[in-house]
Length: 330
Image (cartoon, rainbow, N blue to C red; front, side, top):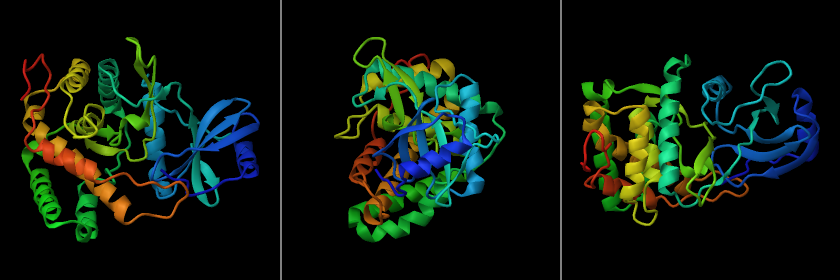
């Protein structure tokens, strides 16, 4: 959770002159995110989220912003970026790119219910179908290449058992990436970081609870959609203390996903590997942020041992699979 670039009200009021969102009213820093600086921005035209991009290159931004616009046009509930008066999706402040997007309705999800898991499974499947005609391509910047580069940097901080786990899993994923089965997986523009803190819900606590929006696409990239499903379920459907799947949540989620974007035998064969890959990705990133942090106001790195537990569990655990295709867990 971080604010790397601190903006004054005067700077934001001046920035707003390039948009058609009304006059400045209020600005509040958001204590979430570890890559970018985010603020809630209130203007005469409504409430927005202002993002200052701290690491992303200017040439990478169109992919993220146009992906959000594409999904919004397809009816998916995402934070849509606002264009400047000259039709641009971003501008600059302090020499850094900055964008303003819709502030979505709803509340933060703390404890996932079956109804919310079902809603997110449905929305994620619709997002995966919606990007089939999205024309832009960008690699997943936190994909296998980044894992290979990052592992040696964090290894000195690990004990012998952790080092062995990291070596084993990274070798497995490298080998998997070279197989015909992996190469045959459906690939699309994916969120790749769709944890519950990157979504909002309405009707929380009722049987009408539903995910009202998804945001923070700035780890998005072209990836197997099965990996994106694994990333999301590894957060939404687990016991936060043990990292294990909660069967009623994981079953509701994957059944709802399958009803919109069917999963077949090929995906089933690689499902465990994708769940392990998703756990490895976030174990590595949390290790990196914990032991090699950047300076920032409000920065509070996440505990990396959480995804170590998730990874260990996914090696042998019972896996959810759509009940239509298989009446029982794998």
